Image (cartoon, rainbow, N blue to C red):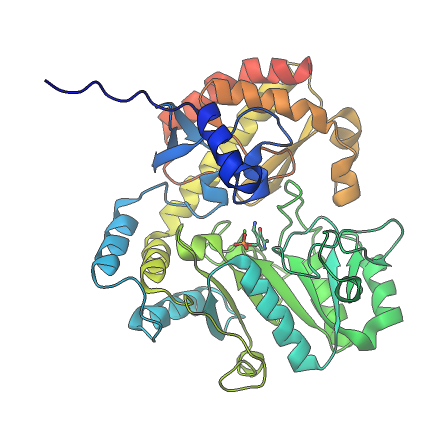
Amino acid sequence: MSAAAAPRPTNAELFARAQAAIPGGVNSPVRAFRSVGGTPRFLVSARGPYVADAEGREYVDLVAGWGPAILGHADPRVIEAVTDAASRGLSFGASTPAETELAELVEQRVGPVEQLRLVSTGTEATMSAIRLARGFTGRDVLVKFSGHYHGHSDGLLTEAGSGLATFALPGSAGVPAAIAALTLVVPYNDLDALRVVFAEHGDRIAAVIVEAAAANMGVVPPVPGFNRALVDLAHEHGALVISDEVLTGFRVSAAGWWGLESATDTAYTPDLMTFGKVIGGGMPVAALGGRAEIMQQLAPLGPVYQAGTLSGNPVAVAAGVATLRAADAAVYERLDAAAATISAAVSEALSAAGVAHRVQRAGNLFSFVFGEEVASAGVRDYAGVQRQEAWRYPSFFHAMLDAGVSLPPSVFEAWFVTAAHDDDAIGRVVDALPAAARAAASA
Ligand code: PMP
């Protein structure tokens, strides 16, 4: 006689238990659904364009692990590479041939990367790139743009104050004011503001860090020529540019956002670049890379210290190598096509329901801003994004979730497709849209 199967715990039960054991029930804040309300889904598996929760419900996934899953979840080539690597040992703390292969794959694709150092998270990559820029230039001040996210290290959580540019407040409790005071925050896409900052502080600025195309306040692409002009301006003042491609790298093209601009008259050459997400294929790999002359300031060659027990972990690197090898031109065509179809369908449904909105696009990354004002004027910076009717998003989000489509749980995040989003998965998204758009209209 077989015992009756134990009843599945509900998402609500799992969340209650998690909240007792883990602060907020989550290991990264946006997962808690604070900005959309309701109960987070506790996921147990993912395959292709779908994720499944603990209650046994399947969702079309438009989060893709926040970016890494360009091939689709659990791609057999990646799983095989990881399984094979795991069977040979989980962590050596020593050099492996695969690390060099991953560095070479990146260097072949991304021109400005002459040398690469692997780390485990995007936060580590940007933190180390900033230390390197400071060590190389002998200067302390960092410039960042409001609404850009570069991870959670001290000095990078600062947001813009009002006005052109301001020595910012810390942005998080626990960040010493003395550290936050070394970060200057400038509105995005505003070269005049950047010129003012360089005119006043140019000889103290080590680096400007910038998302190659902003996608952490929703998607806000650079105005044409912005990246190039900022590199020129920084170099005039002896400062470096760190182009953060943790999110865009190997996603919007084989060579990231840099690749999209490199064949145009706005081509630019950053000094350092940072990568994450796709480079690890869903495992903890991130990297900083750039000009060899700068990279060779890192220990053991140079005086800038940087290290990691799990850096270049063989199982994680196997996932990254398999993902980059598999990401051929056909993959990027499918990503672009899925993004175009889904973003157009969302826009059509919102229009049919009378919801004023604008589609924000940066390659195959997209998001939506809601409201007449932003729809007609467009948005180009954080202040613009904040002028939208953000309160329309939670009811849209939940209507989609109830219909089996998992969207980013905040209006201030990009939507992510995978190359596995086939007609069936896209059809499910399209079918869910009219009711969700009506929910947004009556919010
Ligand atoms: N930079 C950018 C542009 C990012 O999008 C992110 C993460 N979303 C990070 C840095 C930080 O990466 P991680 O979460 O791996 O620390």
